[in-house]
Length: 145
Length: 145
DNA sequence: GTAATACCTAAACTTGACTTTATGTCAAGG
DNA sequence: CCTTGACATAAAGTCAAGTTTAGGTATTAC
Image 1 (tube, rainbow over the protein chains, first blue to last red):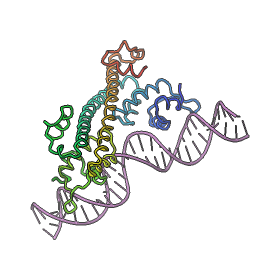
Image 2: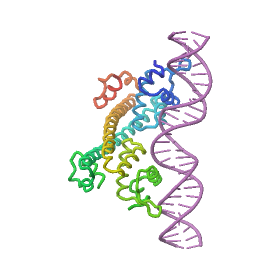
Image 3: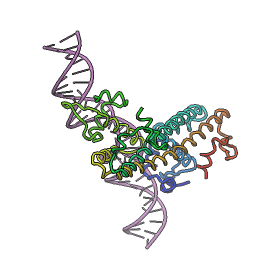
Image 4: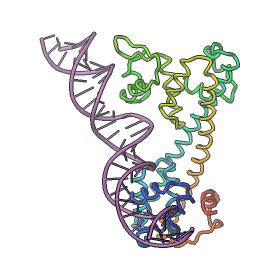
């Protein structure tokens, strides 16, 4: 069993955030000893899941919904599974878009390398795809078609 | 040259958002004809870049900074390059973390598949890594070590 | 015994990125 | 002529996710 201060250090989260999560219902049924929160293994596992679900873009109120389902019992297994399936789809799409974003950033890094070398953008202004190094042309092709 | 309404449709962005971006200085030197915004190729390219930079997690005020550098001329090439290098690092890290998030989601999907099949979590509560299908154990290993 | 720490609550405040509202101009169509 | 539609502005409102503040309790350290 851990105090809020210990958990704050373990997860590198401000105490105020942990209290806020608790207030929002993300630790249903958390124990207290004379008013003081006691974080057990259930709460630590909850925090691990919260971290991932948040990173996947899920809102607090929907994480709360999930936690409520966990309390409700086996009848909510299908709801919980659907939530994770949906998140999986969302994150897979996000990965594809982030990859495209990375292509753009690589292109721009190359672009400014070239601009710095040339001292101007004259040559770059007249670019055609064939001029581009292959590791950098993804985004250019994509954005200008 | 396009009107704000045309650009709104082209980029699937609300008109109010385009006006907000303009107010925040994301289209420095945009033309006007008797008060009406005229979006040219420069502004469209800006929007393509804004889309990516936003997706990479950059804030509006930092995008504005970049746009100001573009107006300022070749002396800011190094600043602009550094911005894209930093974004590249950030996005590469984000990709790694998203991949881990995806591992967790895959694990949870498998978990609830199993729970639905069993009708309870008894078997799952006593899990050890060796019990896990290999395509699903990444996250479990990671989180419980 | 008092001062420092670690905990608690409720309520107000903050931030970023928009969105909405209220009001107004201007050109084209019936 | 007058209404409709597309544009404009300034200012207020919204929303999520915290953070901060003000005030209080309980235990330990000197």
